[in-house]
Length: 134
Image (cartoon, rainbow, N blue to C red; front, side):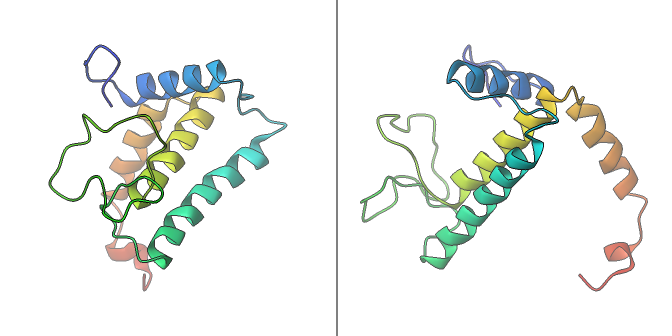
């Protein structure tokens, strides 16, 4: 992710930025008493991504509601995407799910970069399809 000053951010910095934005908008941070709700919100974003496909939207299309053609499609840049309305699309819903996961991890004190690195290293040692069919 790129910060407000154009610099690259680590996963942990991105998670802190997500948490700060969420707090500034009045959302309660994830904690032990609401974690079930916060996890269900992640699932709801994944379901919304699936709904985009059910309605015939293309995976790389980003659009505003009511647009006939996507504002962005494969090969373009989102740097100058207007922020006057909420962007929609499969990719946007995946981003929403990731943002929610980053917020959860940060709020619960998880060093996401270390955990992701550890799990990725372990996954490289596993057998093909982890011994399963899919």
